[in-house]
Length: 193
Ligand SMILES: [Zn+2]
Image 1 (cartoon, protein in one colour):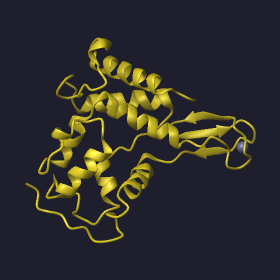
Image 2 (spheres, protein in one colour):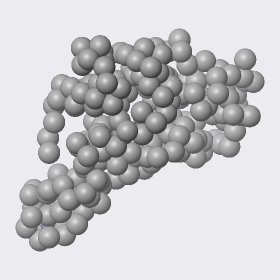
Image 3 (cartoon, rainbow, N blue to C red):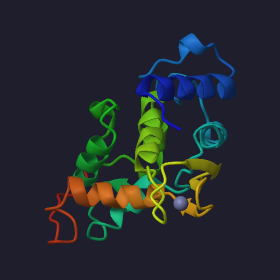
Image 4 (cartoon, rainbow, N blue to C red):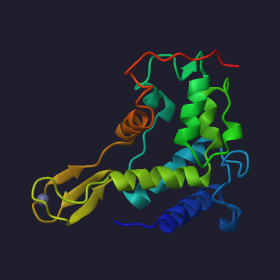
C-alpha cells in the first residue's frame, strides 16, 4: 500500500511506455505526453486505467479545472472556454511540474490536459495515495486492504472505507491554496490576452 515517490514515478513511466509502445528510457519525468511522446486522448484513458489498477485509486473523469472552478466565482478561471489571468495562476500553481511558459491566458481550457507530463501523473497518484486513510474509522485497525479502486476494506471489522475522491481533493486544494480568492470575496480579473 505504501509507495515511495520513485516507485510511483517508475510505475507511471512504465504505464506510459506500455500504452504508447515506446522504450521506457524515452519517457522522462518532464516528457510532455502529447508533444514529446505523441499521446492522443485515447492513450490518456488507457494510462489512467492502468494507474487506477496499479495503485487502487480512481481519477476524476472530467476536466480538473472545471472541478476547481466550483470553488471560485463563476467565470473567474475561464471565460468563453479560455483561461483567464487568474486561471493561469491557478493552473501553474496546481501543476508546478509543468513549464509555466506553456500555461498562458487565452489558452483553451480543453488543451490543459495536453501539457501533462509524466510527473503530472505521478503527482496525481501521490495525492490520491496520501489522502487514503491509515486507520479504519470504525475500529481503528491499521489493517486496511484495497478491495477496488478508491475503496479499502478493514481486515479487522470488515468495514469498507471510501477514500476521498479526486474531485474532493481538487476542491480542498483550491480552498487551501487560494483561500483569499475563493468564494470568500468576489474575484476581479483582467480580460484574457
Ligand atoms: Zn475496522
